[in-house]
Image (cartoon, rainbow, N blue to C red; front, side, top):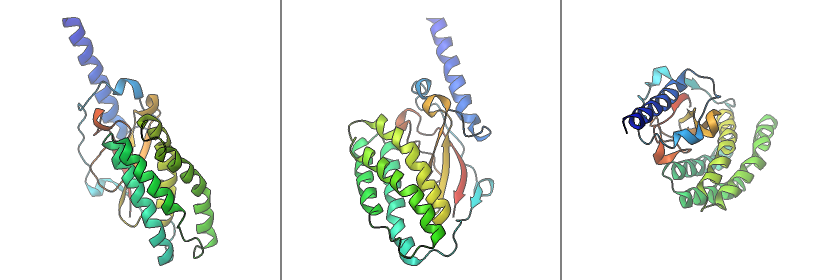
Length: 210
């Protein structure tokens, strides 16, 4: 019994260290399976604003109609993220369905050629991942797999157009067998969409897009 307890404590320590060190690693590090045993062991200090890199959007000349039509896309992405963080696959599916509908209403007519290029490079990918997430309300792990790439696409749009609010670029080093995955959040508080309640606070803030 004593050996089992010592082994369990050792495993928890290793997992805790891996998550805590994510701020100094490159974006390549995660452990999907062992993380499930860690529970709520990880607690992280939220960095102050001056310690978080601030990113300004690439385009300073976004037409008001374009910005207004993109805002629901970002809002519904946050809906998906919060659903996954709460282990609520139905909410994630609802957010993805609304996101797909918002993508169909994005006003591309007032975009500059460079803006159109960036948007179209990510549009079809976003639609595909939103479709998968919306149709898998009973399979949260499948939703999370698609959320990885959805997050990369939304991140690209946010860096280009801005998100209509401050968006925090967070990173979890342990998802997908230590490959890691990023997401965007409307808050500095870490709520991990890849592990939910198992490791809700595992992650670090990389930057904020304002």
